[in-house]
Length: 230
Image: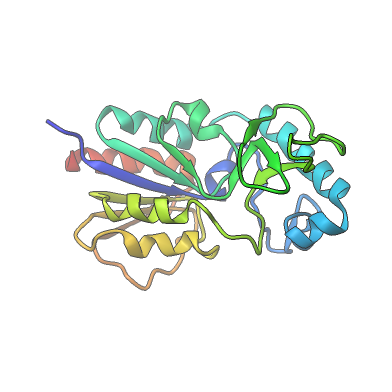
């Protein structure tokens, strides 16, 4: 018997429980930095060293973090479902937890590319430094989708979501677009679940089950509910 296609959109809330700060806190800062100073193309042009320092710090932070029960629970669902993870997070915690189909909407902290082009993309585990150049002569930059940049993977993510037989949202406030718009691509007939410690407002609530818990405990509840849908 073929497994049902389960599409999961995850956000900063699931990574926060592994000790990684959420992308935008209530004070508008990220690790003490203004978003506009470290996560926009203008910031890169104005002060590339500051941007590199910031992401080098983030890379070390992610390397020390460990997958939590939320990540592990989603990976375990592959035993019973055809699971596709679409994540807004730039860390690799889903992969380390064992998920095999992970699409990163906003890039990956352990990858870099030339500032002049989108590909090729290279693995990076240490720091990116000024003077690290690609063969095209461009300075290497983090392979991250910054604010004010297009999201290249969004069309692929929308196509995956449109084929979902079950759609799940975990740990996202659904305020960062275009990622938040993916919920509208899920088929009306597909059962939908949202797991978050504070459930965001959804204008369309067809077949929606809300689990108002943090990811580490909410995914366990989700697993139990999904077993009836296999």
